[in-house]
Image (cartoon, rainbow, N blue to C red):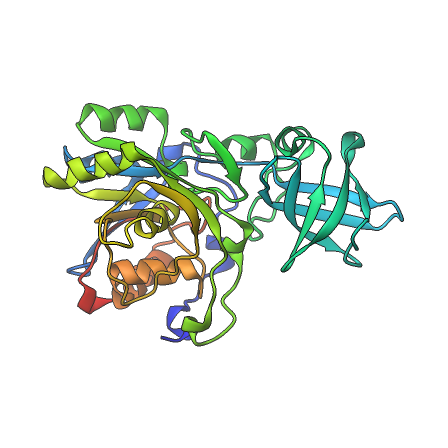
Length: 345
């Protein structure tokens, strides 16, 4: 397929710049991938659309304050976006923006007397040695790394709302945004209705915003991300399927994690790196339903939902969402998608 098959027109004013007043207050477009039918709901209706015995699988990654502003000793400004904290905890791979790329040995001065030394390159990333544990430094002087299409600087509200209520494992530079719609009261309601919750971890990298540049999408190479599927989640999925329940991935990151760990046909407990790229024609192994936000034109995530629901179904649903003035992207509204037939993908 071609990149142009995943394009659509989105007016700028539909890109949500702030979250809804309440987490569960967003809209929800319910799409059946088999029939192609869709309906307009509210996110707070979600428990009524699920059944006892279903299991929701959440990504429990925690967004780190990954954006740093500093300067070289020579005075040149540097903006660093931490992609990943390396084993040992004192070094990190970062995207760096500067008038001239820092060379090995360059010292970068940040706030609070934090100094990092550039020690080398890994592809297009810079390896910085902070000489101390990186996570506390980021928590102290870093900024929430809002996506590039959000036009305001991160503030105190973003520190709370660009984070899921169940986040616990730090490591992401972008939120698993489908999970932003859940609050503690809804999680309690789901549990009381007999709908199970399980967790995976995938640390989302800045590469999630990397554009697809070749019109032949088969030539695109995904960035690598670390993931973990615990044994408890494998058991929860197995129990749900044995009882006739459905596996509901909360977000594309949960979807990619579950499918990466199902390469042999059944979900297994594992951890590692994944570059899984899901496009139309992919045969899903574990996931029956998907909760997700609306995605950027020509993005790998739009390709993923097209694979799940059928390209034509997604095109019609997105056209409806634009016409009905849904709010798009990270702080926007949501979809609940029922998996479509492979022939429709």
